[in-house]
Image (cartoon, rainbow, N blue to C red; front, side, top):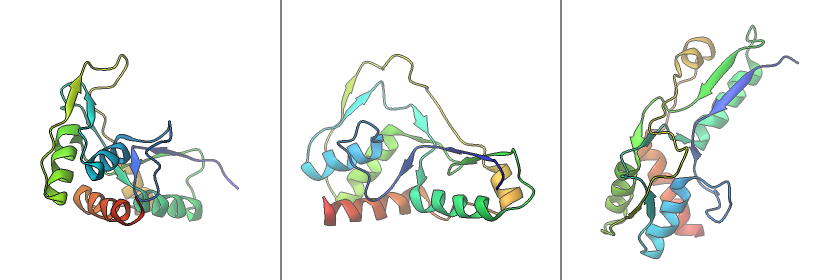
Length: 149
């Protein structure tokens, strides 16, 4: 057994509980979307994050577990892109065929404005590139929330 580190960037997907204190913004967006409620966005919504579909993270974990020569290394488990909260909320509304304006409140103290994973080491050393675009991940996640609520 050998140590290595994986840094997860905003993992989302089916089975994420929006009532959990550890839940991410996308599960909260799904909950509000399907209830036809306005979500609260802290700040102007132009803050961006690297959102990573759960199956991509699982695949990276398996590749890292089987890799050799990676002792002590660190890999970012991200999509490699950056998406604003406004973009995500608008994309989900479009998928659902509805329009619900978000409520905007003051930014939260300590929130990072932009975050994006550098996935070049995972690509080069582990042969891992994310398979799911943000749109495909959102679509799959929304389908699950529609079925399972």
